[in-house]
Picture 1 (cartoon, rainbow, N blue to C red):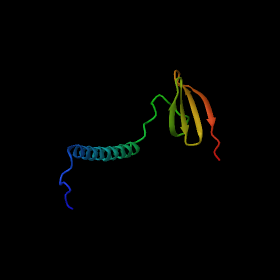
Picture 2 (cartoon, rainbow, N blue to C red; picture 1 turned 180 degrees about the vertical axis):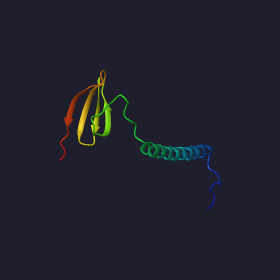
Picture 3 (cartoon, rainbow, N blue to C red; picture 1 turned 90 degrees about the vertical axis):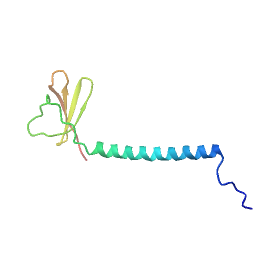
Picture 4 (cartoon, helix red, strand yellow; picture 1 turned 30 degrees about the vertical axis):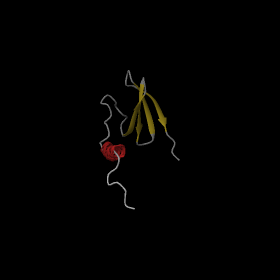
Length: 98
């Protein structure tokens, strides 16, 4: 009853190696992806450009930009919109928080 061969056929051996290599590559890729995510999230935030002068007593919370404008969200719930060409403040938006 024990007539089973000790080795696998060549095509199954090849398939087994392919599956093993794929598993190793996927595990390595997942570890690399998690590592890059941790490194990216622990970086210091980018500083605001030097050409932006904020009103006295405001601190920048975040920065965004469009084609001809850029905006700064301050920690006192305001959005300051500047003209990209002249760096002049063109609009202040108060954000209502619940």
